[in-house]
Image (cartoon, rainbow, N blue to C red; front, side, top):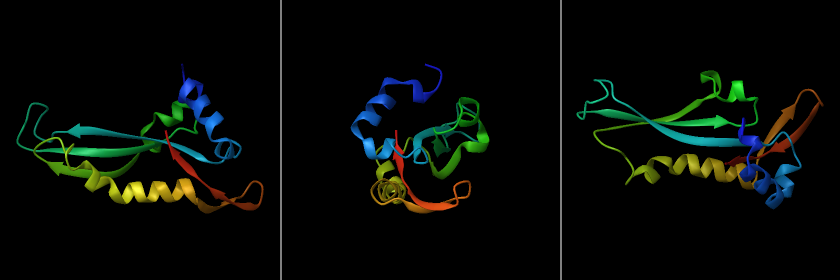
Length: 122
């Protein structure tokens, strides 16, 4: 597998959600977290947890470049926020649910038309 679009999970998603797969302008997203310790990797006194959103509809070299990794939020603290991460992510989850169910009106300048762009968290 070179790109997430080559995976069986992607093909399975397309088979299950035919209406989403039929529109190539819909966006597929990845959500990940990463810990950053400003006082060194072994520092337990304070750390930050970044929440990063990445679009997968791009060629591999673009999806994995910093220009296309969107920092959605930073969670400060002394430990892993796993117990409370749902509280931090609630606004993002609401946005993603709206993008999945309703979409957002978007203009395609190439075709000179508007369409309801939807997004799925892969």
